[in-house]
Image (tube, rainbow, N blue to C red; front, side, top):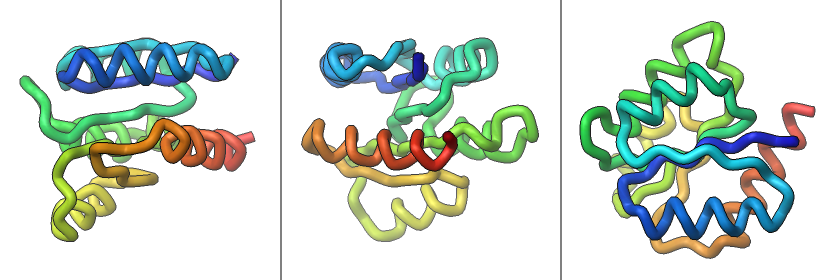
Length: 123
């Protein structure tokens, strides 16, 4: 079963995404701050990570950079999700190694399309 880690400090988003992904047959792991998210990414080695940018303790950009520059985790696709929609923010996301950058508010179907595409690429 495909395992997806969801890291976001907005509880509603985490719970909604987790519920929706479970209905599509995915296993989900959740974290509500950057520190917990980074720890779970290393412990659980998920197939994909959905990562918020603005979070307490460690921001999403730093987590992305730490994982993408580590040989053990660099192949895990990371989808950055954020309310920050400026072009500069997207560039930072790309520079840190994010595979996709989605702005809030988003449609669940859009996230699902990206997840399916990135998971298919790995298969």
